[in-house]
Figure (tube, rainbow, N blue to C red):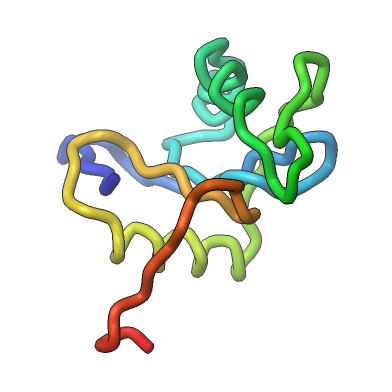
Length: 111
């Protein structure tokens, strides 16, 4: 997914969702307050609870979901994923961890 923002969206920052202290998901938001709202979304928690990484649940029902401003390497990983994602008018969220059952293919032009 590629984020398409309104022209009046203002400054957008990249944030990371730490789940139980583990950097897990990178995404864009206009402010930390907005990032916190995104991270409090019940549907997001439900989706994260259904996923596993190396056989371990990504998120438990009682996990701490804490957004923070992304570090330089995390921003680079997010930007790379946005470049590779198909065009969409939905916001992009990028996993910073391996997700079981998700295969990422890099074509010969990117090798």
